[in-house]
Image (cartoon, rainbow, N blue to C red):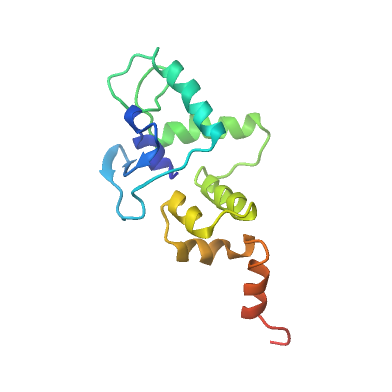
Length: 155
C-alpha cells in the first residue's frame, strides 16, 4: 500500500479495501481505477492487524481511522515517517530509505516467489504494464529470457 492509503484506512476497512488516500491532511478518493482495490492480506499481516485492533479499542480517538498515534490523534505522513519509520529502521540497524520503498520490496519478493504479475499489479494498484516494466527481471525464468531478447549478444 502507498503510505497515503495506509493513513486513510478506517476500522471498517479491515478487509483492506483501498479506495482513498490522505495527502497533506486531505482525504480523497484514489485517482485511478486500479488504485481502488481490495488487497489480499497475508496471514502474518492479518494477525498483526487483529493484535492492533485489540490495542486500538483501548485508545480514545475522535476519528475512525484504523491507525493512529499513541495518544489517539490522527496519523500524518510526517509523523509516520519521522517518529515510526525512521526509528524502526534505526532500531533494526538498517540503512535509511523512503517508506515508499516497501512497495518495491513487496513486488520483488512476490514476483521472485512466483506470484503472477497480474496479481502483483492488482495488489499494488498499478497497471500490469507498470509492474512488467519495473520488475520483469525478478520473474523466475522469464526475466532473463526477456532481457536476452531485448539485448542479444553482439549488439
